[in-house]
Image 1 (cartoon, rainbow, N blue to C red):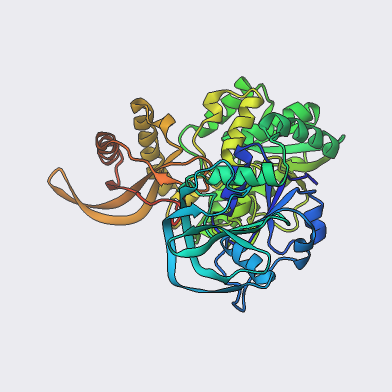
Image 2 (image 1 turned 180 degrees about the vertical axis):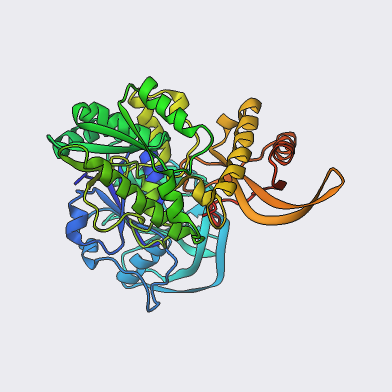
Length: 511
């Protein structure tokens, strides 16, 4: 089991993963664990500190989340954030109540006592609040170290035991010196060294894969996207003679995607790629299916069936490698108390009786870390910085049933969007761009005739790791060109809309 500098117990905040992100950016390896992890599970990570995350519950409610009480006796430095702060107060004998005024958004923090957590930072700073409860009375031996206009206990500590608590969220970008606060906790209070980077991660994963695989064969599923390409590169370094790379054409790909994937692996990476055309099988299974969760599970199960059939053609295949990311684990609610947002086909969509043992070398890292790892392994920037494309493909970009007519419409619109972004220079400025076929007809006028045809939504977002995102502020002229070309060139579409939702509350993909 991999050791962690900092263990973060997840009490269900949608910001929890950002705590790990901020710490990793500073070179400290932080890992999320469920709020109810046992002492044995936590100590197996050999952490130097523990962070209790925020969460939607109230410590005095009947459905409150509580961690193993033994963690308070470990003697490890501890930082509570929002719900974690209230939990510390509750455990040590303080009191927590519903706030008279809920506090969401920016607040001005004033540091009132010199302390290690705010060492070297401005005594006055902007922080981000998001809470409905507040600490009313501090436990014995704790003292206030910072206040805000609406919170006399905005930050408190028992410095002798190295226990700190914050009402605000240092992990979000709106907190002015949030990353520095987390760095102070990891470095100055926990004594962690800033040694986490993609070079050390690559070496440890290659060694781990060699030891785990031994003389067995590994079936590596690739899509041509960043994640699976990086996994294949890792395996090629670790077990080149035991690697079987398979690409499945599931009929849900974009225009010319199969040709592009084959070129990447066969020509650019020199990999002996096996291509399987299973488009009829996938589309047959999806016929009549409208529910997005059911789509994802059908696709996940069908992928495994196809891989099973291919593995039977080879001897000693014991492992299946895939590009599961930390974000997949979090959104599928595997890491902690967070609600399931959507089942990723390679997490919640896998069958329980699967014959393979999984190898998922990227499951501990975020998307931007995957890109850095790809560069570390020698992959080209063009490949590493391709826009993400979901494993279920276009199936989750078609609202309702997936069929050939809908796929054809979506493919044509998608090509136009990507062409316009690349020719304008905006493709490399954005995180992800795609079209969604709404399967909603609306009235239009073309050539003096009435039309009643489909609408397509254009979705373009800016992000760093995909856990949060904002819509891209594309120039109006570019949006106009995209709309004009799609309506003029794609028969069957007479309306284009632009999605200006952020994540959260929306997700990047529509399903």
